[in-house]
Length: 223
Image (cartoon, rainbow, N blue to C red; front, top):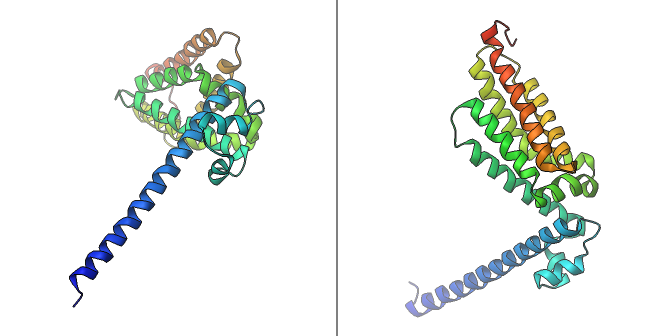
């Protein structure tokens, strides 16, 4: 049978180790967040090429060694920033879409929200302008699709279900809509007047959705 004093000492040693581990993890997590926050601001303001790691660590108030502990290179740091902005945007759009149960309204809300995001300096600079250059077009497209294609597929599936006569066309429709949205986002991002370009895109997509919705009513089956 274990002596009570030995058991107590053992428990205390375990508790101290756990506390040290937790504190170390908390510090590491806060350091990583500080680096990502600082890098996000700098990449937004100066772009990938115009941002140095010295500037990032100075803004985050950490050492170069701490940066390399989390990110082996400037490219790895940028990719993490890019993915974080993409994931945040996706969550924001999904939250907006989920506010409605009508599939056509959901599609319009999703498009409006996405175009709104495309006009935000952070998303526009990091995800639309710097992403393809820093990551390469293939990696950029792969990451973007992984983040946003699922939303497009769900919206399209809901629209086709409401139409009731488009069996087997979900994948094709999603690919076409996704391509249109990507082109629209680039159009808005590259425009001299993003607000005006966004309104043009909203009117165009709105007209396409209205036409699609009216097809069955006018005796034109989807499939």
